[in-house]
Length: 88
Image 1 (tube, helix red, strand yellow):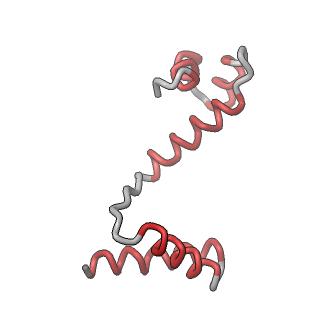
Image 2 (image 1 turned 45 degrees about the vertical axis):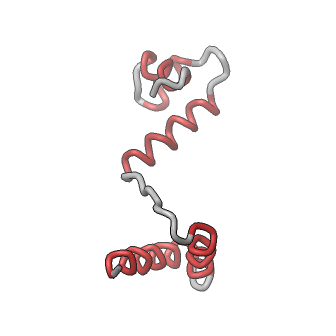
Image 3 (image 1 turned 30 degrees about the vertical axis):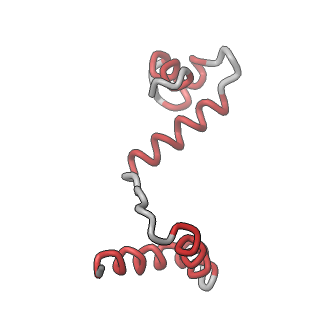
């Protein structure tokens, strides 16, 4: 149980730093009330960034701008196509 407490304390610190006190503490309280007792998966920073990047690419796609997105994101057109088609 101590590990879970440490995690919550660390999360509260992060939320307080990014949202400010007491908003960070209130955000943590809201999370606990909404998801109490549930197991929560926390992705790695890389995994979270890639998911965010891919979402952003899909939002910017206009039907034909593969090359522009590839240049903007420093990816190949093939990777952009995979992201657009939901295969990445």
